[in-house]
Structures are given as structure tokens and as C-alpha cells.
Amino acid sequence: MRIDVWSDIVCPFCHLGRRHLELALAQFEHRDEVGVIWHSFELDRNAEAVQSGSVLEKVAAKYGAPIEQMRAQHEEMAAAAAAVGLDFQWERLVGSNSYAAHRLLHFARSVGRESEVTDRIMRAWYSEGQAIGDPAVLQRLAVDAGLDEAAVADVLASDDFGIEVRTDEALATQIGITGVPTFVLDQKYAVTGAQPVELMLAAIRQAWDEQGTRPEMAAGGGCGGGCCGGGCGDEVDDTLDGQMCSTDGSCGGGGCGCDEPARA
Image 1: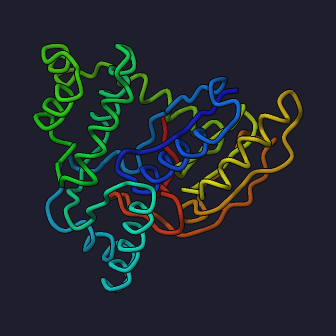
Image 2: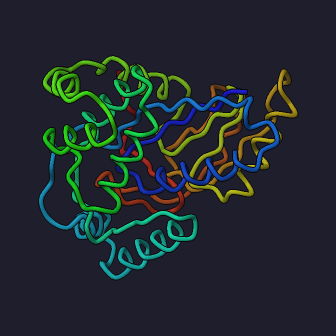
């Protein structure tokens, strides 16, 4: 069975959802027969490579929310991350454009190091307060994760693997995904948001049991701003709701939503 996942590196719920998926698959009886394919998604294509100022303050200003409310939401996210072994240092976040990082992940996949590079970049952004939109930072992180220094420099100095990023985003638009994380199970069922491990496991088991049949429902929850289609064409119910996610990398309601659909 195949699981396709659309996510952005700078969405905390994508980070949490990735971990929940890992834990769910660890409990799944047929985990060795499941392939997971990660797809790029940018919450804000126009973000500066490295943004100055407090991410928390930018989020509060963007949505007109009290800073105390946003702080409480971030603290809740940090607690949820800690519960599954992740370290989310939200006060250290440096707003960053994720396009170059997404290109680098596609390159890492091409040489068999996608998991290692993803782990290193996410740890740098969520735990270490590093600016992953800075090519020099990405260069160092990629080498830390085992990639060839010269090859990484060539990728970052070009637009190599940009077509792979844009293809992922175009596919997301085609099937109605405008918020992340979105997990598409067996190319039929959509689960959105950083759902609990037990819900994710139940959805995986359902998709496994119903391979070869038509989908009947989507598991919704937490897609940003009600703007997320969350499914594959007409075969998945659109039952999603929630709050808008900040394009600076801070989310509310279980998932990250974009201001508008990504375009190829």
C-alpha cells in the first residue's frame, strides 16, 4: 500500500504529523508492505529567504490575535511534540522560505539519503533555531546528514530539483490539497492534520482492508482556515474545518493552511 504525504518543513503540525505517522506504522501489522512518499508543499512561496523578528509576533499580527493566545497555542504544540519525543523550541524559530530546503530533500532522495537529511533540517529548524532558508545553513546541514559537499553546493547554486517541487505542488492543487499535512492513503482516502496516532493507525488499517474498493469517507480535522480540499477529486468527502495557519511556520487547529492554492 502507498501513502502520499504533502507537507511543508516550516509547519509544526507537519513535523508532529510525520512523527505520528511513524508511530502508527510501527504498530501496523503490514508495515513492511507500506511505502511512504513525501511531497513538497510551500505555505508561502513569497516569504523572504530568512525573516527577521519574532515568528510569534508575526503570527499574532497577521491574524489579529492576542500575543498571549498565540503563546498558549505554541506551548500546547510544544507539549504535544514532547509527548512523542520531539523537541519544539518555538521561541527560537527563525522565519524561513522552504523552497531551497524542499529542493535539497528531492536531491537527497535521489541519492538515498532523504530520511537523514529531513531529520537534520527539521531538527535544525524546530529545536536549534537555525535559518533553513539560508543556503549556507542548508549546505552545512546537508553535509552533516551525509551528502557530498560539492554536490550540495551545485544544487543550492542552481534551481536543480525545482521542477520536482513544482510538480508536487501542482499535483496538490489538482487533487484539492491547500493545507498540510495531508496524508493520502492508497491514493483514495485523505487524512488531514496532525491526527492522533490511534486515528492514523485506524485509517491505515481501513485503507489496507479496503484496497481495491471505492473510498467512502475522509478523516478530517485541523486543516487551516477551512481552505483545504483534503481529498482526491470527487471520491473523497470534503469535511474539513479548523483555523488558518501562519505562513511563518506556526499553526492552529491541527494543520497548516495556505492563503491560496499553490500554482504550478
